Structures are given as structure tokens and as C-alpha cells.
Length: 89
Image (cartoon, one colour):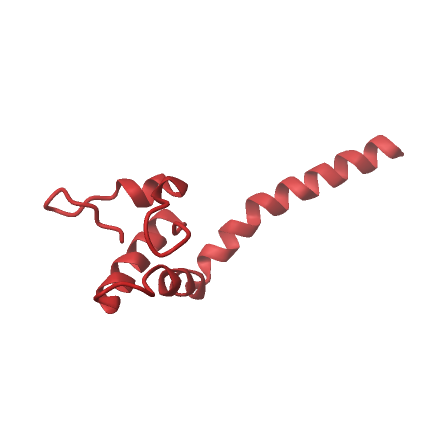
């Protein structure tokens, strides 16, 4: 009985850790909240939020803080605009 409980507990933890981010990203408020925080100190906030939300929708993540920390989200970090410069703020 105890090994079965352990296996069930492990499976439920694994499933919740996989499904929770997927559910969070489908909610549009996730990206808007994260991008509002990320762009709070930007000089041109509306443009910052616009591009951040585009990147968030595609990458399913936004780096923490208002600047830097792009190592937390490689997809966000590696997106480039048509001029070869970073697309995501």
C-alpha cells in the first residue's frame, strides 16, 4: 500500500508541475501582469509592453525584474528583430 501511495504522490506532483505553467500561459493576464512589471521603468512603456507581450506569448515566459535576467528565458533572450537587435525588452 505504501509504495502505491508514493507512486501516486510522485505522479501528481509531476503532473501539477508540468500542467500549471501551461495553464498559466493560456491566461492572457499572465503575460500582461509580467510585462507590466518588466516594463515599469521603461522610457516608452507602451512599446515595451507591446513587444514583451508578443515575446511572452511565443516564449511562454518573461524574465524577472525590470532589466536583464534574460538567461532565465532563453527563447525570450534569443528573439531578434529584422535589424538583428534583441526584440524582447
